[in-house]
Length: 192
Length: 238
Image (cartoon, rainbow over all chains, first blue to last red; front, side):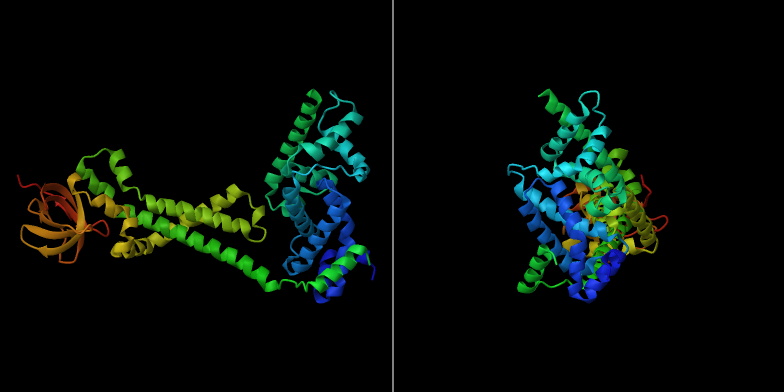
């Protein structure tokens, strides 16, 4: 079977009918969720692996709870997001480690930086570095989560609403506030 | 198979991790819908009792006490039932937010819809007499009377308000046991009664305390309902 030709709903049905097919879901979603967790959390690769394990255990346990009316991507991201938030709460006092792999998101960071309209204040290269650092160290979870989902995971407001279990209007307002907060953090850092 | 897949396979097998059955998710969703429905219904019932409270006409009757509008308005507002109504609106909103897809609804719109549904249903229940039934049922239970603000308001002979059950009927007066359990000799010579007062009837009386355990009535009406036409209209014989 060519995994690429099978949609998520079909994969779920197969996995429910035969537990051995669950590994196909893991195979499809392991890398995207690992990337999402690394982008959202400032943690080591080992932490991400442990989290991924927890995420997929929860996916396995709750697979009968998936409703085809909603996108499977949003459903699985919701589970990953909830695990990430639990991890964030447990480890917020730990010193943060920025993962070098984040360099691969340079174009996304530059895109976000350009939206903040800081060109007059800082050179573009500087801004990108400051955006990354502000994202890693300067924002609360509720602001970082919307920016990561919107700009790094390229989720629509509808998908974000399903992942974060909030109305779309609230999501839109949160994204705007998060960008404002990010800009304020960057500008403040420069003053200091 | 990836390393993660191998680990998961071992873990699921070793710890015998089971999948939750579909019925659990369906039940959870149905329960939230059921609690939503119950909260809307109880909110509507609370509103029906509030409307019944005003239908009982205490506001008009208390005008006879010559208090300011503000005084008798705040005396008669059914606080317990209004708080109950607001509480059930909030509960129904909470349950709606937790049904599948409920989070997508704008919270203000959800609250407004809940309020509208409870208002419409409350008015409908009131029209069918359900408010009166609930109010009477609660009033008849001594244990629940403390929730009935009307009872507390009317147990106020010093201010000219009295309510209770008629235990004896005579030509010029009644013996009434108030809801607080006190016995009163009520002089009805100044009132032309438009309805028949029988032993066992619960009544509310506007008038004046004339002594320890004695009361002169200026207006009498049945406790339940606004009273029949011509009931308790003051006709001073002076």
